[in-house]
Length: 81
Length: 143
Image (tube, rainbow over all chains, first blue to last red; front, top):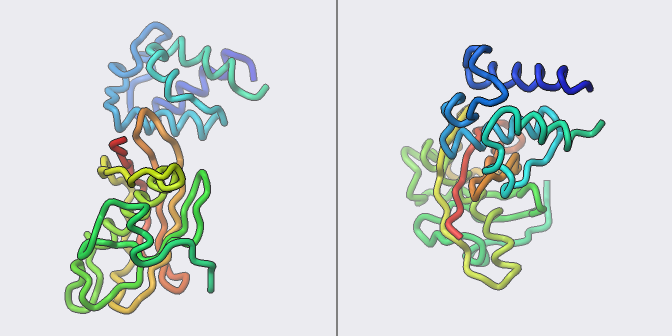
């Protein structure tokens, strides 16, 4: 899957699950603020990403994935090509 | 359906911090890294029974304690005391029926994801293969 295609798929999944407008999701936007995530809904996002893209997001790395751009890179780097 | 029993009765005290009269798991049949199969024989004097049926809070507590047993197993293996856990959130709760006293609940808990100490699990409970309750639950384990 090409990276741009992957990014569009990630955005699509997040927009549907968290019911936000497409234009608020930009590479530099803060994920927690944009999706209004607390500790519990963060678990939902991780489970959603892991289930949808078959990647395992380590607990220790989640805190570093602050922006959508970082999330895209992480998934792209860890997804089975 | 007979399964080998891994833990039953007071053996469960090694997996969960709860004690009578609020112990809501009576059997554990299988535990792996990602799931547990548990059971509860609903007794007449169960604290959560009313009018001869197990109430909604009892079903939820049974699921939560089954999840607690799942979380407590690694502690048991390490020779440690079972940790305290808290229900963080319940989603997609479906209760199909309230089981009568004397019923044998069979529950399958599966770990979906674990993030920073919060476990997201799915739970399905049946009696004689008939659906009783299902839900998603977030459990916070206080290690």
